[in-house]
Length: 285
Image (cartoon, rainbow, N blue to C red; front, side, top):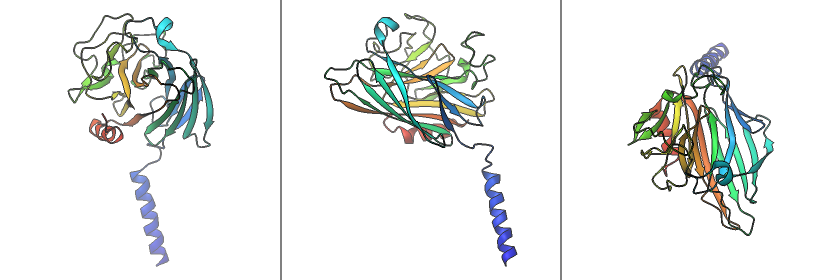
């Protein structure tokens, strides 16, 4: 009897690891490297994904404005804590106008969750209207020069990227690809509830995205990267082999507090599963 139970137990353990081999997806962890948020995972193409987090906090009326003189609100970021298992990171951004944004970032098996609290403790309204997490994807998409922005065609990754238009996955370059703006190249997609005067000063597409999801496939086509935020300001294909779903603040009144949340998905290449998970995480969209 004891031998029979032992064999059954061994069979069960073997079956579990056959179905869930740890080398396939041992999960994600987090690291801070200067201004970079680094997501690490053994199953990722380069073993990591880097995000300029956050690249900038921005004012409204930005579409046709000077990026440095008008749009950017400077800030400083402080690492508050990182859990021993490197699964939970807390950051605090302090903007020059006094606004404080606290970030709780949690790494899961194949996704990273962002929970933000923005608070204006001052007696003056803040102009902080939106902000930019800049996700670098050269290595993930299999670009020949990876994250080296000094070499190669910086648009070589674009055919691997997508948004959703009329509820259909649409590869880039999307139809009606815009080419004129204050700064070029790049591409911006503005949702219907955001003024088109308040987005990145890069070429602005006439297309309106169906939702707030933007992503790409890996170089070997086995994985998907995608990201979304609520509320979101714009979707953006940038000039550093990057993609953005930039989140919205909308300004903060004196003593006002706002909540923002976001996701990064780093999962198997299955867009149907991606859309289902996205719909569960962001029912507002």
